[in-house]
Length: 131
Image (tube, rainbow, N blue to C red; front, side, top):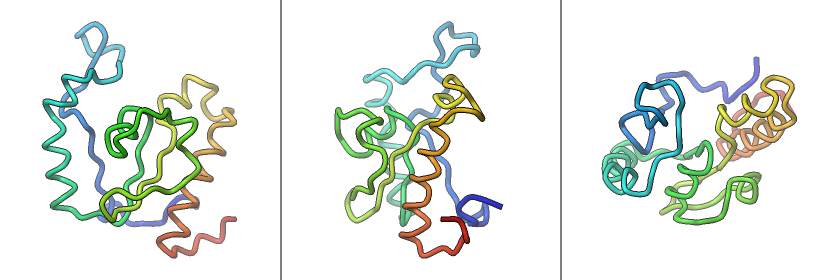
């Protein structure tokens, strides 16, 4: 078994937007959130973070990484490191849809994601027997 080995009830999943942004409005092709959409919804995510007080936030992809870390630097340069956001550790990594678009299970990006997850495992002191 791989992964963080954290029970699902201990993991909180959130999005910047509380609706699904799509290209055609029919819900068939996703698109990154627009700046105005993020500005409109971000207070909800900020409240969720304040209430939950996570030890670690794993951001998936550019929009969440740029918002959480208040940066314009892209995910390719940001991933592979742990950052601090008001005392909360942040680990950026690729969004699953990006991996799917770039080879899926055969994508070399999967190894990068696992390396990012191992940063979290090490920080949290979890024993996975996976090095």
